[in-house]
Image 1: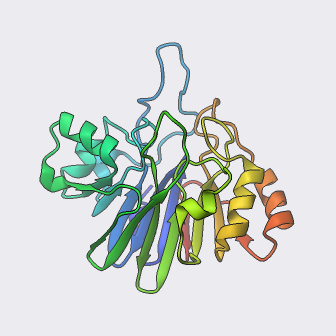
Image 2 (image 1 turned 90 degrees about the horizontal axis):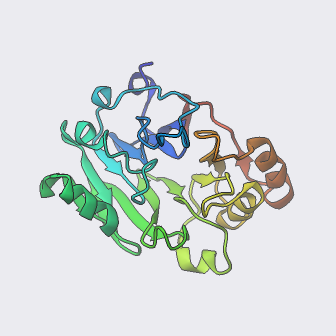
Length: 246
């Protein structure tokens, strides 16, 4: 599937799980790309049940964001192939440290921790708080802004008291990308609707479901809870490989 040829500026494509490609400001940005089956254990746990629709060596990016160092967000076997064509990896300390251990050159790395902001090629990358528990203490959410458009990727986060104040969003984004699987420190469908209600985006997109049997998640429930808590926001369940404008 030729994903990139269908993508115009101001669009995104969901690749399954928490993986997205964003086209913004004339650049292509990958977020938490998981393209291999490297998370599968010898006993078959965390096997992909949704095949990857593109191989890492066929994907050309300008930037690759890894919100934390879990294998389905920082795909170690795919990283060298994604960076060898000139992409820059943007990530918090834990990921940058692992990338350096892999031998990734400093020129291909941009450290971005919570509360920090970087501008590259006219695109603002702002790392914000997310609560993914003690196993990912420096995990980040991401706000992308450029050309009057904005997108908020919550990262892997639970909905916890004080989350809104900790994130310090500052804007109402055009698009919210939010997990709904309700396991491993993530919001479930109801909590994701709560997040949608305080973010107040124009469009909200559920993610982080059905990549593995262990993940769970129900987008139909998310749509129902959005009607209850965020009736003025447009919820949209993207198909894997679908290009969506924002």
